[in-house]
Amino acid sequence: MTEPDSPSFKSFDPTTFREKPVSFVRRSGRMTSGQLRGWDELSPRYLINVPPGPAVSSIAEGATGNPEELFGRRAPLVIEIGSGQGHAIVHAASQRPDTNFLALEVFRAGLARTMTAAEEADLDNLRLAEVNAPEMLERYLPAGSADELWVFFPDPWKKARHHKRRLIAPDFMAIAARVLRPGGVIRLATDWEHYAEQMREVLDAAAEFERDFAGDWAERYEGRVRTAFERKGTEKGRAIRDLTYRRV
Image (tube, rainbow, N blue to C red; front, side, top):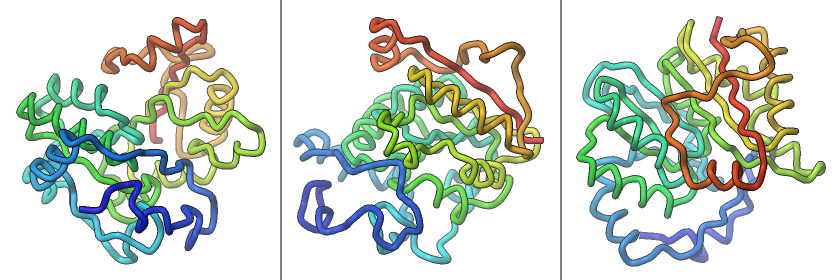
């Protein structure tokens, strides 16, 4: 197994072989022995074996996957982009056994923790992929295969010169629209006001989506468990902004 801080990972420039900057930077340090053990033992059960491309977390050209085959059943599919340590998606998967959940994350330690939590909850309706999420949605999964897409607290890339790395941008909305079925929902949340306003501006301008809320912001999505990250933002006085849009 190759660890995230090994030379083979460090030798890559995340933007190599890509036309635009990605919305992540590999910050993971060395995994603990427990995380390594969880990764090795639980990957066969939970991790999707996505053929890698030439860049970090990229997908090989022509590689595709069918959710029905990946989960072994046909069911509604919820995809979370940037699942972190898996708190939100593991909780949701345990509450909705009739729904399939797919966690997309680039940080291996977070994936290891998610798999460990899934195993403790004995979940069979959760799968994970260590990939650049836009590539997964645009090329690997079938069009119209997802019922919901979650983007909770993405990296806000606070500095103006880094705003080009933000995930929620006009070109991403076309990718999100492709993977969502008609009537499917995209749910977003952030504690960074400027990014929330940008998200709303981008979604309002996207012809493939319409608002699924009244007023300036959507009500908090009850299916999103309150994580330590969200509580920390609230304690610092930052407003949590939710947005919900429907695929037309």
